[in-house]
Image 1 (cartoon, rainbow, N blue to C red):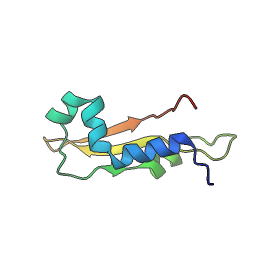
Image 2 (cartoon, rainbow, N blue to C red):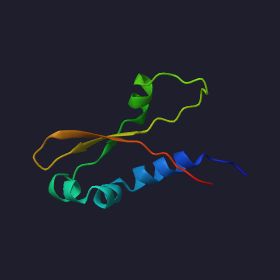
Image 3 (cartoon, rainbow, N blue to C red):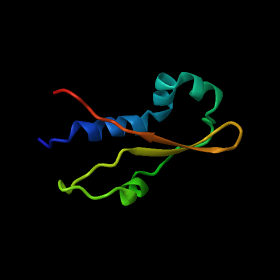
Image 4 (cartoon, rainbow, N blue to C red):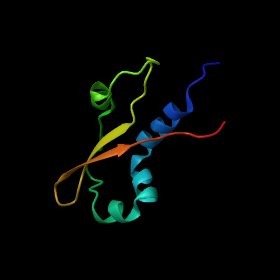
Length: 86
């Protein structure tokens, strides 16, 4: 059985359900500002390129997401996920 780190799974869930993530954790911002008619752009590879290397070698970057607002502006969301527990 392949063992996948929990933070990788959570980050995948956030990417798959990002609109719901915004509505749950940032309801006022999501409702008033976010243009959900435009796709979110996930920039994990770009974020990983600017982060320093670690001694562990295998590093998973947090989520960097480009979103668009209803007034036509671009916003950047940096999401840090750290799973605590078993």
